[in-house]
Image (cartoon, rainbow, N blue to C red; front, side, top):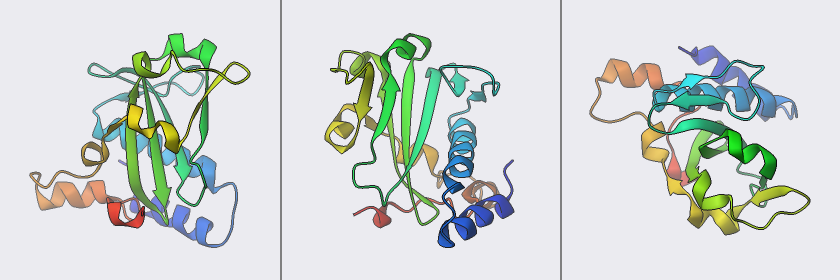
Length: 161
């Protein structure tokens, strides 16, 4: 279980302008997604995917800051064969505000730019909104939800407007 202190540290670093917070946020988001989708995180040395689940297969997980103009991320086309699912998580002010799941079958045909597929807002419609799957379910006990909220990485879709 990820401790609340880690999430608070990310928020503190972000508020104080630390640029390296992206790496910490990315690792945190990977753990959060894996936990919520009942996936196993891949070894750090595993190339091509971040987690594996029975339902989604090999999953590549990327996070972006909501303050970015395009939320752009790239996927190396040659690495698509190693993954089944791509998940993009948008974070704003320490909160997960958007989470999209892209089956590789839906994006592998996209035109490349220098061997990479660019995923940005113009392609969000190709993904499935999974924010509710990543946010704590209301049907679980209050104590269980409290452990999952891991403030500040909480569900708050109103922040992304």
